[in-house]
Amino acid sequence: MISPRSFVCPHRTKGLRAVASGHSGRLREIRDTRRVLVAVQELEGIRTLALQRAPVNALDLELAEAIAAALEAARDAASCRAVVLTGMPGVFSAGIDTRRVPGYDAPTRARMLRTVNRSIATLYGLPKPVVAAISGHALGGGLVLAIACDVRLAARGEFRLGLTEVEAGIPFPAGPLAVVQAELSPESLRRLVLATPTLRPDAPALAGVVDRVVEPVALRDEALAEARRLAAFPAYPRVKAQLRGATCERLRRIAEDDHDPLLAGWIQR
Image 1 (cartoon, rainbow, N blue to C red):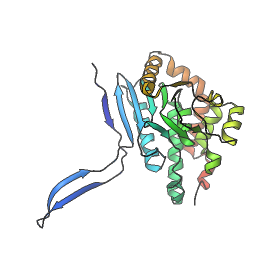
Image 2 (cartoon, rainbow, N blue to C red):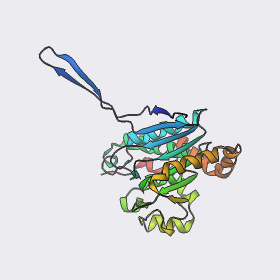
Image 3 (cartoon, rainbow, N blue to C red):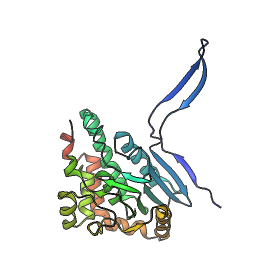
């Protein structure tokens, strides 16, 4: 039996807590309280990236940077033949953290925008198969992450999926906007973005977003099997590049040349 290789994403929340004992001030305990924001595991060349910023994987700067770092590491790793992107049981990602991000100062908001655009460019153009295992609720930028994957599987259940930017008051960064425009039909964009519904994974209106709905207990295995199947095709990276070349070039310009009008002002309190 082959054991999975586990990795620790280099981006963690910082913090070591030391507890001193008695008047001597001797160190009794050192506890590492850093949280891993993206858990990384590799099995037979299939690398799983699991978002785990409790309670709902809301996207703040730290999580966005952790996602960007994990994607870039997967892209560059020769051992990684395909990627599965998932969340925690019951939640994939609730999108932008509307409590933290609006409170960022202007330089931090700009850094967040640049990180989002860089990570979505890396994800959409990854020269390997990428399967989304949507493990629960996926809203706003969380659903955009799934849409940027090659294949999207979703857990069956009373979960809500939606592009809720209008309702949340969060305009699309240029990178995510380019991806949803490339992946969704004009009719789906109108219905899902402007009407801003939140729907069950098996809703007919999500037929162009979710490729297959599976039982929650089978989601990870189904995603891994699909990733293995696609990784077996030698021509996959080249054909993917042909299919997405124009959008990937647009994403590259956005990420590298700061072609995002929201850098002049995004969301704030």
